[in-house]
Amino acid sequence: MGEELARIMRAHRVLSACNHSLVRAEDEDAFLADICRIIVDVGGYHMAWVGYTGQVDARVLNEQIVQPVAQRGYEDGYLEAAEIRWDCSDRGRGPTGTAIRTGSPSVVRSIHTDPDFLPWREKAERRGYSSVIGLPLVHETSPLGALTIYAVEADAFDQEEVSLLQSLAEDLAYGIFVLRTRDEHKKTLKSLTHFQAKTRALLAAIPDTMV
Image 1 (tube, one colour):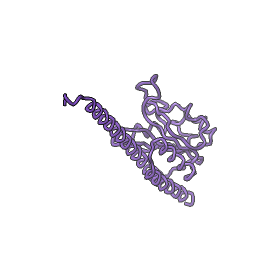
Image 2 (cartoon, rainbow, N blue to C red):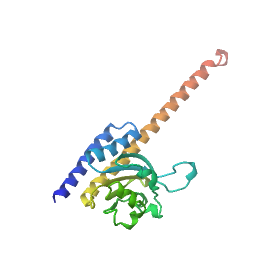
Image 3 (cartoon, rainbow, N blue to C red):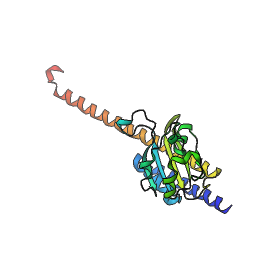
Image 4 (tube, rainbow, N blue to C red):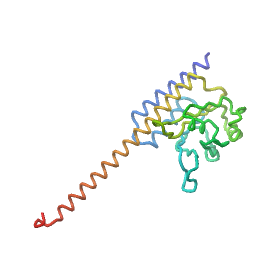
């Protein structure tokens, strides 16, 4: 019961700190980095990362690859070699790909025995990972990506902790949407201001006899 309570309390601390980060957020990249920092530094999880759906570069059009965009904790090149996908292939059935594909949290209680984690098992064990959870980042019905968290202990994510971390992922997805909407508004306003200035300049250049 002591370990279970400690896990729930750390999830509460992480959720609270992440909500404060959301209120202060001004930039998407900085926001994602801060969320990963809180999960590791405040929550004590071994590693956390955010991955987005979509292409990594022009050579992989239409590939269902998860692109890492933020990370914190002991990673040591793990993500670069992971080749995580979100289709139904062997590399799409891990916790990250499953969370994105299904829209629900996906927990690997032991990476040492879970058959779906086999493609990453050896490298994960070297880095001390024992259990992992993938949490979907969804706006309306569109998958944005996933938040994935690793722990050094097996069976680290019980039902209440999963529920709290799911709330965190929902807040993270909402924050991403808000920041993108704000950024689009700024770009639109800037374009409008530029258009108005150009129009005034053109009107000023028209001779008085033509007005």
